[in-house]
Image (cartoon, rainbow, N blue to C red):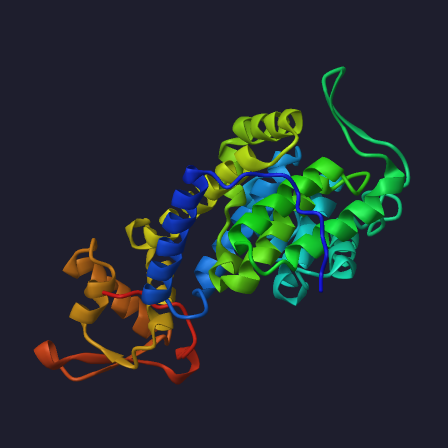
Length: 334
């Protein structure tokens, strides 16, 4: 039997409403998608996640530069910023390999994330730390000697079965910020590990870049953290993070409204599992494009060996080439 001190927070009516909304959206995604995202969507969201999480910590590289590093291209910029991105790429490549309930896995992730950036990455701090706003101490972290026990209790809390995974992920994120177990990298570890916790229960979170919405509301993010520190409990942070998660899920559900280029449309289409299709079938997926655009897309797909054409005029049909058939890819209902 696991005995653990539950971190302080209150389940409010708003939290209950938010969990219901998130669960509904997750259900809608399950009804519309299969297990894996398209390669293009996976890559886009990986770029957004890494860029946004590091931007919150002051990294100056642009999304285009992060993209270049993911594509193994050379980038000019501060060495520290480049190393932060390279480390983050390694970590997010291993996202599904981490054990959400293991402190050893947590420390391994920190070692990868902070390699070459601090001394002794992957180890809890052995000195006192505080978070400063200008010259003012905004948060004085617990004594270093208490960190191992506090983190042990936090991981025990994760194993409590009668609490929502959504809530536990938010609480872990906040408590990591509060305990500040490392000399550096606490914010990015809190955000990373929330994703690790969530994707064990909801695979969709593997490619859901909620860090982007945190980055867009960064002032509110820090304001809520500060309020929770003053109140001594994480209720407000849970409400904030559930709002962010809900917004990220809503964006994913609106994927079909995003403006994609022809290659992105083609790559997305081949992941739907259709082996044979017509131009009408193609347009049922991309409802906002014209017949002329659909024809150009399909011709390009044929030229690039994504599709094979057969028949003529109104009897023309297309087949996905065998190298592009992915039975377990992202699919969307027409």
